[in-house]
Image 1 (cartoon, rainbow, N blue to C red):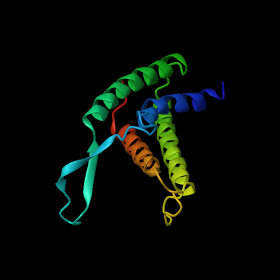
Image 2: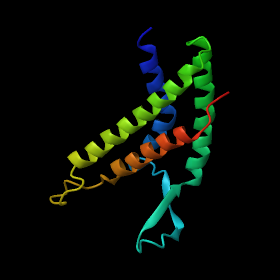
Image 3: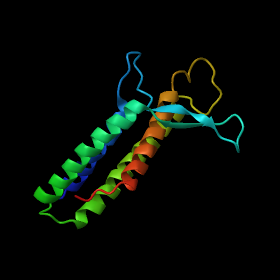
Image 4: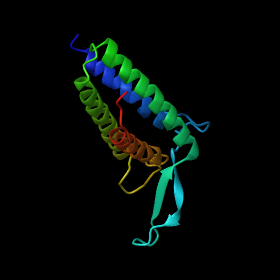
Length: 148
């Protein structure tokens, strides 16, 4: 089936993508990052961020599920053809990067990056946190060994 790889990459990227879309009680999304204690010496006033403890735990769960799913797909859908693994991983990363671009566009359309007048650009920082999350998730996927 020619559409199977496209469906599979959307499905596989969702293991990581949806972590950036967890709802809060206030109607926003959970921020997956927190400020690091150590200040950046080279740039006064700058702060680094790191994944929250909860995010690290959820990411480990997502990684286990992702690894199980990709292994099953390769065995059952692609008859054990290991060369497909690298292609699926690259497509997952592209999907995450595409979503980051979408979120950045949403932020801009909602008034981000422009003069905040008339309340048009309120509560839009969630889109930037989503961009950061998708970029982080893409890097995470690229940095792991996804072999059996």
